[in-house]
Length: 446
Image 1 (tube, rainbow, N blue to C red):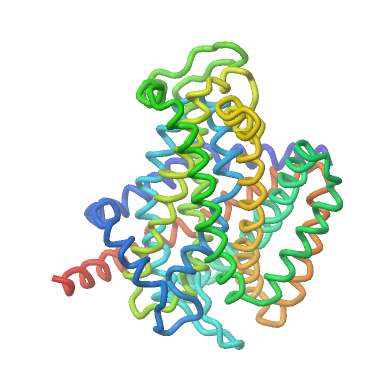
Image 2: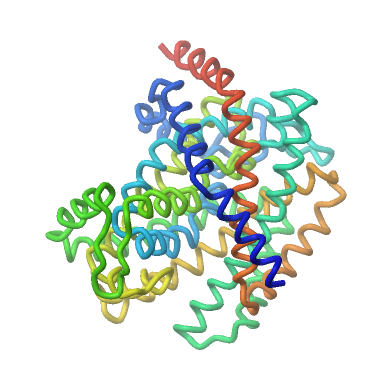
């Protein structure tokens, strides 16, 4: 096992190295400029389409609003709490600046993914609309590229059991044990039961629950963060200045913080930003492919809001609380750092905001990723594999809650990078299709 872990660690260092970061950011820049900055210029239009999409009746399985909520249910998770804190702990405050940059170009990536997912989606044997990278690779690039879609499905299914299931269950069990001394096995069993009640109802029930829970949890967590920032409003300009300055000069060692060079800020800021909003990984378009819409571009403008909300709103609030608190210099990392930062600002209540956010975020992440994994498995083995997958998904939750997951974290992180590769290749090759559809759509709006 140690040998396997060492080999996987080496592979992880390669797939999350400079070439991958350049490929992800490069693809985002290529799409951003190819779209003539449309995702940044049309944020308001995206929110209008989101509002109008609450009661859509076009062909599809779920409303555009619930498609975004399902996508956000998978992306708004531990990355927004533990991921941001880890980026700052390893890369210094400057990592936050590079998270922002990743999100700005990631909006174009998420937009393009959704456009292609809707354009090339199919209807399966159960009558559900299915799509995502595996389908737009096969249907958009042709049969000779189908193996690349199969590779995405394999990597996505494996990654889902790690980052979307066992890791989430473990984070919740750890948080509830630390704050309320609850037994990990009982926590895992309760979560498995709740997930099963939703998952066995299929995509419509997942979307319905996500449509109710995601806005509530986002508002509650953001509200708590805004209270902390309001209490420390005078320190916000200084915190932002530190973030921007550290992005280009690095961060000196102070307190328990070991110091970080500019490259560390870039590396951990980009990597944790992608981990948080998943732009480029190819997961979100699987949800958007099921949207009730008659135009791929319209759904694309809704989809790009996921990156904006996830990173530029929720992650930013977490980051500012951590930087303002000064807790990032203590040597803490992950969820413990976020909890300490909130607790300092709101004694007696702050840590509960983080715990509550972590529990609800992780639960919805398990729901969102169950859909992603299910669609990957269906692509590989057909609809007959859906129920065995669901049973296996539920069974993995208590296992994840009770085990040490260093190896699972490493495997999931590696699979995330590997599933991004086929998707990014497809986005570059199919970029002209996205540009053409976008140009025709907005020309018709004039």
